[in-house]
Image (cartoon, rainbow, N blue to C red; front, side, top):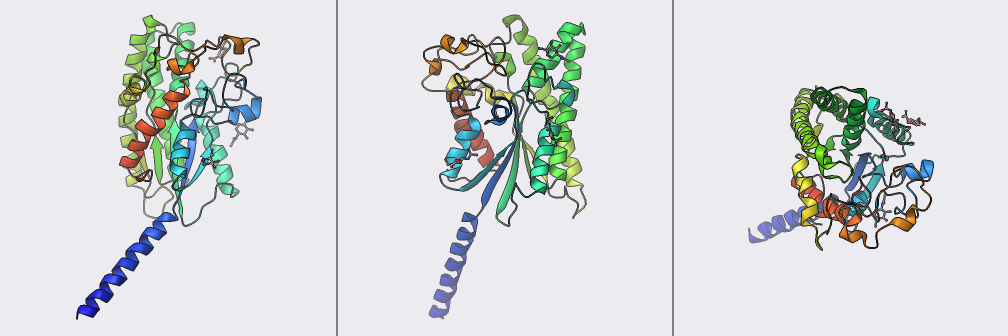
Amino acid sequence: MYRANIVVAVCAFALLLSAAHAADKTVYQYVIFGDSVTDTGNVFRDGGVPDPLIYYKGRFTNGPNWVDYLNQSLSAKHKVQIFNYATGGGVACSFNLNNTRYPYARDAVNQTGNFLADLARGKVPTTKYTRRISVSWFAANDITVALSRALTSGVDAATAGRQIVSSLATCLSQHVGALAASGVREVVLLPQSPVQVAPLVPDFLRPSVAQLVDAVDAALVQAMAAVNAQLDAAPAGSPAAGAHVYLLGDSKWIGRIAPAVRPAFKYMGDRSCFTNPDSSMRITPGLADRICTDPNDYAFYDEIHPTTNFHKAYALDALLPRLQLFRLAPRDV
Ligand SMILES: *[C@@H]1O[C@H](CO)[C@@H](O)[C@H](O)[C@H]1NC(C)=O
Ligand SMILES: *[C@@H]1O[C@H](CO)[C@@H](O)[C@H](O)[C@H]1NC(C)=O
Ligand SMILES: *[C@@H]1O[C@H](CO)[C@@H](O)[C@H](O)[C@H]1NC(C)=O
């Protein structure tokens, strides 16, 4: 009797161990889409920008970006694969793509297409241990491109704002829907970043841009609820069956990151380490001589791109716990 219990206990323990062992084999495969904040070298590979004298290894910042920090942290303990399709100037809506302003930029449809092509030719591997999680972070360029188009074309701000909000909700729904239909089960959508705080935005425009960002936040909640309702109704066995979109909150938590970074930034959105008038997608001779001496004093490196210390806090203190909350990242890191 006793012995039988011990045997059962030992077997149960062995089963637990083997379950833990099997869990160890999980390969966390993050497939990433977005813009310059997320690009880890795609634009650099195509165009040799951003200027390597100023920006770190094809990142649009002065050091590793959030993708690098997240990868470093996770891959210290787990098998992690990163497939990053984000490009500087990337946009959610194709009609906001402006290759004059942002050469080498790709819209969400193109980025998704590049992923699907890699998937089809086996460049993005699928094994029984693969846990494929897509992470998309768009919308900052859509807002700036669409706003400047509206301002120059004379459309009134309220009308332009409504169009931007509804088009972003539509384009992002299509993007996450396409990922779900391609068999990605766990589709993460990061919220709109609070672009109103960027040094690029003049003070007089900050309140209206903040309102626009709030409206995008609200529209995305509705739009993603609608996408999830459709996914829940997908017939068993269809490609999208079992997929879910995780909209990770709204712009507010992103806005709280910079003030919490230690050592504290001396300058938030009021000024950047340097200004890059011709945009980071071009090389401006002599610009390297005009970089501030200590970028760590600044939340922003240039007028639109945060410094690497922001990226680190974003990745490790803000995004990682949110991914872990939904079990979209391992919890023991
Ligand atoms: C992720 O981090 C690991 C460990 O630091 C590194 O070997 C790997 O090249 C990184 N992957 C990418 C895509 O940066
Ligand atoms: C694209 O960007 C260029 C340069 O900033 C600008 O002159 C042009 O009006 C933009 N086009 C559209 C369609 O927004
Ligand atoms: C994305 O755009 C690039 C440049 O125009 C093109 O070479 C590539 O084939 C496009 N990818 C897809 C999947 O359409």
